[in-house]
Every structure is written in C-alpha cells, then in structure tokens.
Image (tube, rainbow over all chains, first blue to last red; front, side):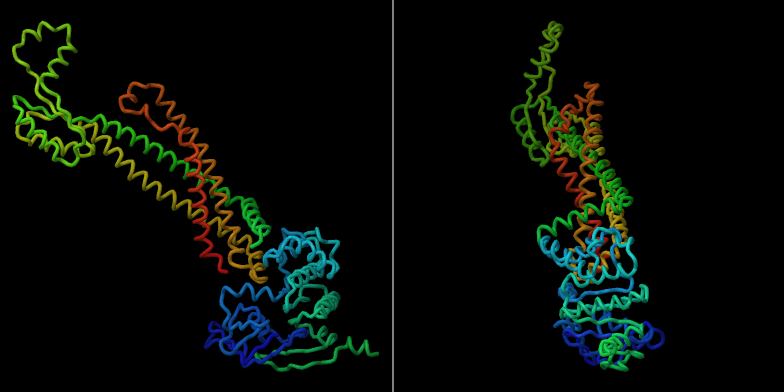
Length: 235
Length: 299
C-alpha cells in the first residue's frame, strides 16, 4: 500500500523564498492497483516519485510505502525498503557491459539471492517479457523497446510489491508504448501494484483506470476513467 | 551474505582493476616503487644498526691509571661503574700489559730486559652500553681522581651515530611522503572507479544494495592492487638488495672492519619481507580506498 498524508515539499533553493513542489497532497493506493500519474512539467510528478523511493523526505506530512514509514525510516533499513520496490526509468539504466541475462541477474545478486534461484528466476522473467532469445545479447544491441522490456524484467525479477515506472514510454517508439503498458498490466495482474508516471494522454485515455492528475503541486484529479480499450472490448 | 555472492563481489573487485586499468596501473606503480624504497631503506637501516651494534660491542674506552695502589684502583673502578651508560669494566693490569707487550715484540726482548721499571699503566677497559655517550664518558672518566688519560674512539662512534640519526630523519620524511603519495593516488584511482561505475552504483542503490555490497568491490580493488604491488616490490627488493650485498662483498677488507660481513641475508627474512610488503600494500590500497569512498561514494 502507498499512502501520502498531508504532504508538503518545499525546495529552499528554487529562487526567492523557495518553491512549493507539492502542497497538501493526500493519496492512497491499495495493493494490486494500477495507477497512472499524469501532469505537466513542474506539476510535481518527479517530486512525488522521489518521495516514494525515499530519495526525498517531505517538509510536512507522512509517506508510507509497503508498510514502511518513509518519513521516519532509518538509513540502514533503506536498502530493505528499496528491495520491495521495482523501478523502471525512462532512460532504461541498463549496464552496457553486461548481457541482458547479467543485467537481470545482477539485481538478484544485490539482494543476496542464491545462484540456484537466479538460474531459475532470470529465464522466467525474460520469458515473461519475451526476451528469452536475447539473454546473451548486450543492451546496446537491442532496440529501445527491447531495452525497456529488459528494464521491466529487471524490476519484476526482485518480485516487488510495487513497481514505479517513471515515463517508461518516453524513449521508445509510440507504437511500442501500448505494448509496454500491456506488459506492466500483465505484471499488475500477478498482484504487483504499479504506479506509472507519464505525460502521454493518449495512452491514459486508451487504457483508462485510476488516474491521478497533479497540477502545480496539488492533486487536481484522482478518479477512475473508462478506457478506450474497455470500450473496444465492450463492443 | 551467501558465499556465492561474496565470491561474486571479490571477482567484481578484481575485474574492476582491469576495467579501470590506467588508474590501477598508476596506483600499482606508485605503491610498488614506494614499497621498494621503504623495504630497501629498512634493510639498509637494519644493516647500519648491525654495524653500529658491532661497533658498540667493540667500543672500548681505555682508562689509564698510573702509579696507583689497590685502594686507588678500586676507587677508580667504582667511580667508572657509577655511570649509567657503562656496560662492562675489565681490569687490565700493568703486569699483564707488560707481558703481552713483550710477547708481541719478542725480537726486541733485549730492550725490554734493559728496562728496570714496568712503563705500562694499569688500564680499565670499559665497554659502553650506549655508543652515543662516548664523549660524555670520556669527560667523566677524565675527571676521576687518579686517572692519567682516557682513550676513546670518539670520531668513529660519532660518525656512526650521526649517520644513523640523519638516515632516520631522511628515511622517515621520505617514508611519510611516499605513504601520502600512495594514499592520494589510490584515492584518485577509487574516485575514477566510482565515476566509471556510477550507473551501476545508482542501479544498486535503487534496487536495495547494502553499503557493504556497494563498497566491498572497491575495497577489494584497492587491496588487490596493493598486494600485487607489494609482491612485485618484494621481488625487486630481493634483486636490488642482493646485488648491493654482493657488490660490497667483493672487497671484504674494509667491510669486515666495519662489521658489514654480518649484514642481513635476504633469504633469511624472505618470507617475513614478502608478508610485510603484501600487508603494507594491502593497507595502503585499502586505506586510500576507504578515504575516497567516504568522500565520493555516498550510499
């Protein structure tokens, strides 16, 4: 579960008097939900993500993610919190010297999984993102869409309770964006909560579901909309 | 941590040496040269100490006493022994001296027979426990009532003592400078390594790697370079030192006088030297890495 209670974030270095990046934000996302977070540049999307990964602490209010109170979490417990969250970035953040297999296995080593588990888990998640045949290839030899699928496999490999995707379709062919969201939806169906930040309104309108719209640091809209996908299925 | 992941981290540390090879090579060279100089300095310093100790063993201050009865001799001996730096005191009587002298100069026995009186003085052979007190000892012994004269090899002793002091000061300064240079180079090497691996480190942080997991490969990298540098420095020390010893061994006469025939043989301390070099290298590598990580690797 993700919960933000009366959260304010004030940046002191944002010019005269600083900048209010988030103001009195209250959000609750239950386990197993799929949520789109949308908003214009400067709306507070990045600040929100930084709060959820505990790169930032709120000026006021409290943030809870997967049972951790991020406003009070001790530094030594941070790695263990982060193991419960899978991150997907716009720029993929794959390690170029490592193969696709090694990129995914790497995060499992980081969280101290056994060789046996790694040998079983990596092929499973690569198969899930339909990249089993590219296991021995380096990321630089893959297309943008394939690289993002590796990033999704890597995020899902640690079996997180929550996946946060920061503009995951920003660097790939628009036609592949839908495929990417489908993939995240599949992961969501396994019970993993997914928060996807995007500025692609077409995607949001197509898939629908819960939408949180941030505007000038506040929640301007938080509700469910029916997607075109659902309408297509209905017809 | 699982054994498999521990060995993975060890491997990552070693692989990183190659990945960051230019800075690794710079660290290797500077640690190796420093350890070579440190090892050679320590060996030469130890040899100089051997020479000084040998000279100390042989150092004899001769205290001459003329026309003294037994009571006077006893009081002189007591006065000599009151000095804290006095080691051994051996009495060498004028009769013994006379007999020894006659034995040495047998061919002039007629001349000795012609003498009606024994011209040799009674002598105390005093060995000092601290050669640096030679000058002080001479002054103190000369001041004792009944002492006719004092003979002390002061010049040789003072040269050795000042040589040892000078070498200790220069060696110490060079040692400190080399250690600082080593640490600075390893520090920069680690900083470069952190920069090269910043993406990997960012990913590690985001997926929940512990501080240990992130820092350990850098630590291994620094230690590995240090150990290899230490081993190579040891080999070069062996070659350089043995060449030096064999060069001096070519002309034994003067070195024998100085006690240099008893210098340390490298083979006798070979394994201790290897251990010292590797440990010192590992320490320098690890210390530089720890300093750099504290500054540049905020996890």
